[in-house]
Image 1 (cartoon, chains in turn green, brown):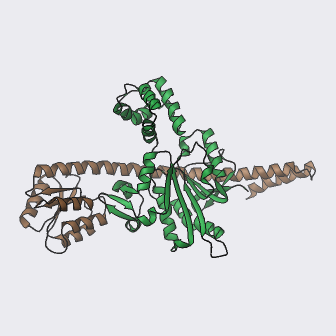
Image 2: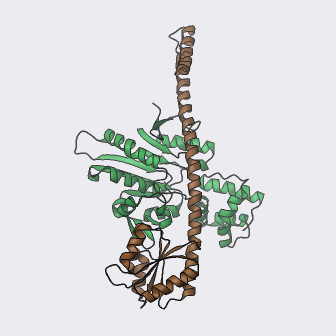
Image 3: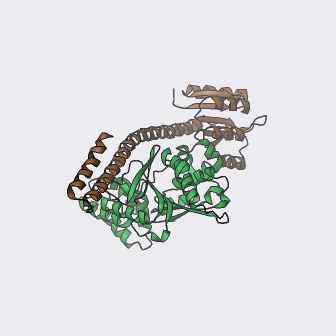
Length: 279
Length: 192
């Protein structure tokens, strides 16, 4: 494995921060080596400085994409932690549907949900499945389910909606697997009825995202942990701006917003926490 | 004993016994079924890692159906089909339905053992990944309970601080009243 020098560590650490906002501690050389050595070697680089130079000169940004893919952990599963999905099903969705359904029945109820670190899509598809199971008749609703991620590769896989048996085996109950997926060789593909409910696009959370509009429910789980405190503050401030005044935010079960975003207050329902804007 | 439970399904008693003997000799744990129906019954009762099944069998449950049944019961079961007249079409069809591999008759045992070795390796890696995942889930669960309790407590205290600030800065009351009201708030908290 190609070894990284202290100077290269500083250089690459800064470069990764610049392209992704992810802050990797320069003291953890092995992290850089395990994730980047195969890219460097694949491109015939003799050093990480060489890799950096090549990435900078690559106007099509293919190398940058490879580096982002290697650095972002696409560790994700269907219904990761049951808690947030039970919360969604039993509290957040019924409440928001109640609030958004107008008295004149002619209008469709419009609800926007955002999975802000969608990775390969499992979270958003899980959300879609919860919605599908909760509401028998979807024709009365207008659901906008958006998934964003910084990795092009993850977004491509998410859009395709195909998962191998190892990705499927973890978290997805057999009943739902058989109802919403079709066996495709050794993999499973999300059925069109679920696939049609969602949209994915690339987004770097360090960049502005007001253009996405306001959301009723935002999932932003296990991504901010890779950011510095300063960037986490900025991110959750922007997320609060993108949240409807009575909307809900769900973060990872081991994450905390104490000292990060005073505009949001935690609320507990059963065993899960969600956040709402402070009134 | 090797780490794989193999179910052999073949209607030909000679091939069935040959497979059973050779696999047992290689220290695999072997179960046998004489047709698709018996295979289905075994799959429903016992955990199996690999199904080694003949493609063409009498009755309504042939090799492809055994494959489908096995995958329905547990999608991580590996299925190897044994085919006499290797038509590429059936093989591709089987692979599409989730078969791991297919072998042509007469069975080349060296080839079979190599494939089983590979499957055993993958399953070992898969199991240790599952164990790690499980350990991580436990740690994460414990951590999240602690963090969430702290998060709620911090929010409660922040709420109290905001309230105290409002009371202390409310200049429509004299200072001593404000201080007393604030103190009552704090001691009231302890009474709970």
